[in-house]
Image (cartoon, rainbow, N blue to C red; front, side, top):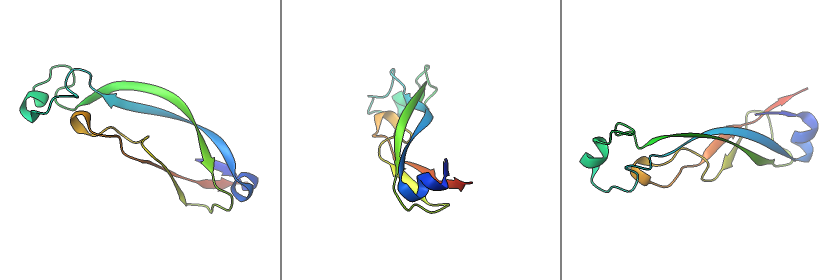
Length: 95
């Protein structure tokens, strides 16, 4: 993510567009791994649906170039209906 020097020193809320891979609706709730692997909708991957959403990401004041911001539960979904992970965004300062 690119931020200006003013945004990095003072903090900011930056929009970030993310393409998410959501859990397969056909097999996400199956607990039997062999049955999930034979799913014809996602071919055992457990994720197929893609959605684009825009989130407002808070950049803390005083962030340095190359630091990462963790966004909870916006990472990829867990296999076979597991909880989503965290998304880490690397901040780069431009000017």
